[in-house]
Amino acid sequence: MNVGRVVRLAFCSTIVLFAASSLPAQQAPPAAPVPAPILSAHTVFLANGGMDATSMNEFKALDVSYTEPYDSFYAAVQAWGRYQIVSSPAAADLVLELGVTAPMAACGAPQALQNTVRIYDGKTHFLLWTVTQPVKAANLKGTWRKNIAAAIAEVVSQLKTLAAATPAH
Image (cartoon, rainbow, N blue to C red; front, side):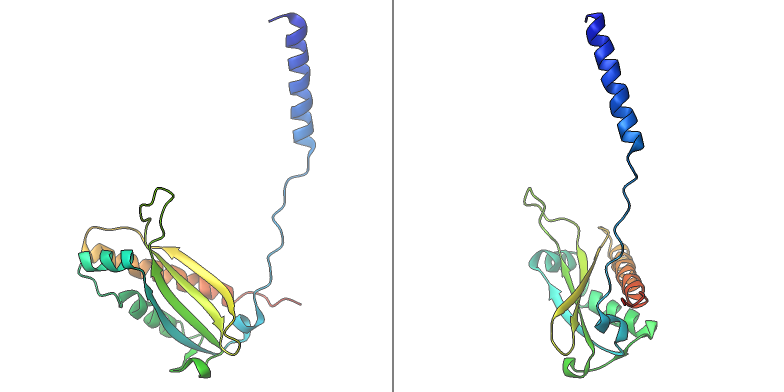
């Protein structure tokens, strides 16, 4: 390599490094507002959105009831105490629908199971928000149950954070 080329390369590298260091740091955008019905809700209907066939097979293989995620979700929301759980969607400010899926990877193989809670406005039935949490894979029934409970606890934790958000002005 000739000396002129080395000098130009060093000069260009210095300019690029200087320019990059003088750029302002990227700031995260401000948080988007949480829909008002989520913040003002007092009553919820908990809906069992079911599970896809892959998830059902996983539950069957470990002899775990397919209602276990919903049962855990119901118990966690009830224990939270933020909302009154009602027996009809028509009587609810929000409908929280729990579903279990195993999305497919690009190669066509199923990925880890995930719990998804879709939050609907009880009056308009419009989707307001979605919270998703993966379930850690397991080979033992006891570990599987523990992982389901942990994923449900994380979903409820995310719901708590959402419900405690500051309303938009």
